Image (cartoon, rainbow, N blue to C red):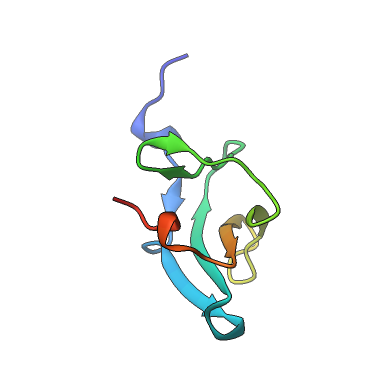
Length: 85
């Protein structure tokens, strides 16, 4: 299958980073929509992240666009090693 620009998802804005619980949780949010099924994969230093007790990957319906989704990366108890290089 060949992917053309009409198949590309539409991103509503740039990734948004929010601190919760006094910085104990960092959330990176991306909003996107597409007429095709979408999945999100998060990377750090060009390597895919894996979910863990500290790293959560959440997909939910976008509350501002009923046809879109929010893709969230939650880092609980962020550490210095969590920063991208």
